[in-house]
Length: 253
Image (cartoon, one colour):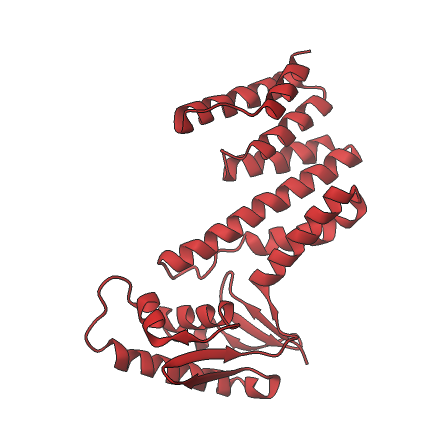
């Protein structure tokens, strides 16, 4: 039986397509944050101090060690209550360290997104447009979800940033695919979304310019170039790369 763990959006654990633990079973933000951290960092043991810093950033309360022990105990009970020990999931502890054991076959949404975008980009580089849609769609669908929606902190923001960057990369792959297939309207749509998410991403602007030119609207390609130029100049004190300048000159005719 396969275990699937969802961390982007509401936390959930499925076994063979059936939800055995949902967000309501992880009582409190700290329980959800602790579980997500142990899943992502499962390939190593983490110290209690590391978990204290995660759960109580800044100055930890005097009773944080007792509180952490209670959270660990509750999480262990939650996992056991879902019958997940039979699927190879257990929370181990020893010598002031904690680590989550998972079977090698376990599927984790945020890791699946990272693997999928790598596959999509590999297909783009190989010019194999027929192999882009599936993995790019998987990556974009997962990456659109907010990681631990009700939690905050530096680690959570870092994970959200990774998903945001993966979404932009997936949109770039979709744009390449739509351009190759002659679907200029969809190419413009995905490229424009990528630009709106990351206004400093030159590759997305170049794709948008290419899509506008391919659609027979070089004036909009020129406008996109000037938008990029203004953003880079005003925010970073620099200008577009030679590659982008070349596209601009082609759009000018």
